[in-house]
Length: 59
Image 1 (cartoon, rainbow, N blue to C red):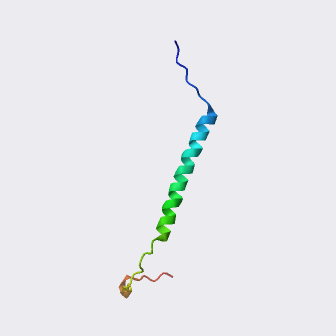
Image 2: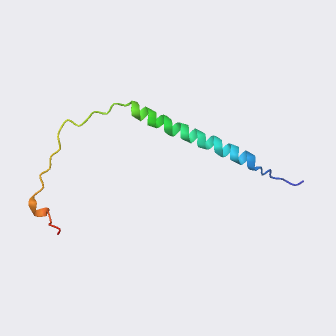
Image 3: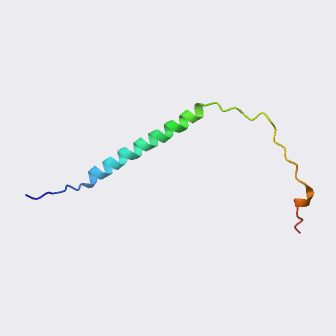
């Protein structure tokens, strides 16, 4: 009795298409849910004073 392996390219393409569609649906769902979250804007204004010593004049 011999074991035979069925190798059909149509089955491989079909399973790959299902996996890719599931992954894309999950990614789009995550992006959609993150878009729904209202993140607060920063309240404190960021200000950093840079001394003039760090600037180099390029001619």
